[in-house]
Image 1 (cartoon, rainbow, N blue to C red):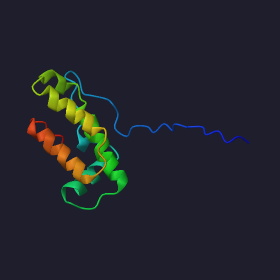
Image 2: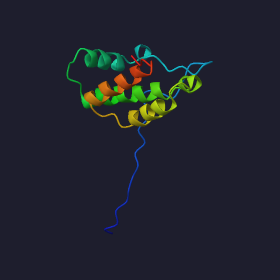
Image 3: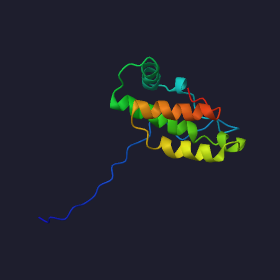
Image 4: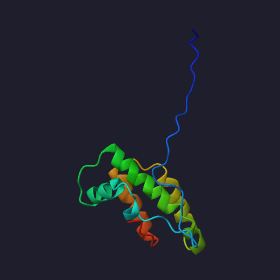
Amino acid sequence: MSDEIIEVTIYKPKRIPDIYRPPLGLPLNWQDEASGKLRSAVFKFFSYQTLSPNEISLIAEYCQHYINAPCWDATGEFPNELAALRQSAATLSTVDEIGQWINGCLEIAIDPF
């Protein structure tokens, strides 16, 4: 036996695919998610109920999907703000962070929910 440490990366499939609606590259709507888990988590989020870590991560994953849609690049109105929202979406991990992120989207007329 060796004391060598081996790092292993476990592939975790995305629950929300990087698929965007043609021809403009629109994001998928949260209400169209087939399992119902995202819909349930979103309703809990907006009714101020306690969310599980899995529900928080699912909403965060949807936020990433939404803000990375190609259609937002076409508007070109707020490139710095859009870049900041895309970057911050990748690190959302709490209900408060998600709420602040949504407010940032609304400031540039993007409404993910």
